[in-house]
Length: 172
Length: 327
Image (cartoon, rainbow over all chains, first blue to last red; front, top):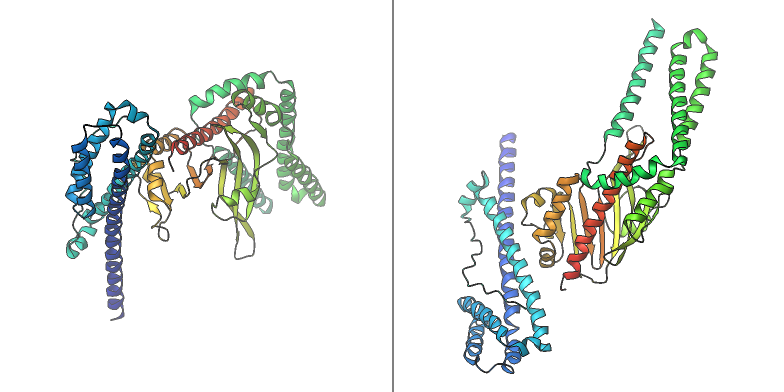
């Protein structure tokens, strides 16, 4: 009887550790995703300052600026699809600044550029972190014998980031 | 029958001593040959033309011959212990004392360390000061928060400038004490290699620790995975700011650390505490030197200088990355 109890005890302990390990990796990946979100918000928080700076130098981009404000408000209200559009419009706006040499030379704009570069780097780093964490989680639940337990508790692979958005290179 | 047993025992001890001497010399660090070639040629020119060194080499060879002769005499005395009686015991004691004195006396003052290495370092690195008798204090090593130790030794001190920042570097050897069942104390090496410290103007306001693979049971919340498979196989990264660590450890930085390992076989550990950068490399003794012929001596010096080169390259890489880093 005693060996049987010990074997059952060991199996239960292993299952317990396995469960905790999968949950830990999943939460880690989710947390990394939230970090991307934080930095995206930080990026979009620069919008009011950017618009104020651009307004003084440009006369023809009013529609783009209005569009950005609307999208940003939607993003703040939790519309994450607006985030994607906002990202594209935001990138286009930054590309448009190329046409205004006076704007590019202004101190405010240079300061904003610096902040923007930092946020862009942080977004890139958080994306790399997310991809690594998701890869770890996916590898864990797809490997034998972990996959058996993962199937049992319904753990599914998480999606890696896909960059479907239009990438616009901003030259400073 | 009795003396033959002793002969076999002494022969066994003799073989064990010889084997231990040769195996200890074979534990050399694999260093990039191309890099050391440059220094080897510089060292050869200085070594071959140095009269003082030539004299020291002759003296060393003479002493080695005496040591060898004494060892053989010691062995022979043991063999004839039963025929010579007490007289042999006196001879053994006398030979053993002379041998121990000769071994421990060694050659403390060496032209290689006093003249040749400082001269090559001066030619290749501006403002680099070198003193082989001094080391980095244990308090500086402790502030880097590497593992604990019971015995600390440091020598081959260097100080200079890299990318405009002051750095200090030296060979460090840390050991841990163990006491066996019989109460005998033993020391095992924890780290033996090159340790360096740079104080930067910019603070990253976080800690980043790049170390060899270790158990992550209690610190896995601070552990991050790096997107470089080769790097992951060798190193672990722990940090309290994952985003900053990811920004700093770009694929370029991690592949440079892997290149160093692939080219030289040297493990590198990096710690960043705010504005302090600590680097230690598992190089073993920094300057592995023993008297031989000028060609072999130049190779030994060349390899040691290539290690210094590697440390400075790693230092430069990290300093440049931190300088470009927007905190």
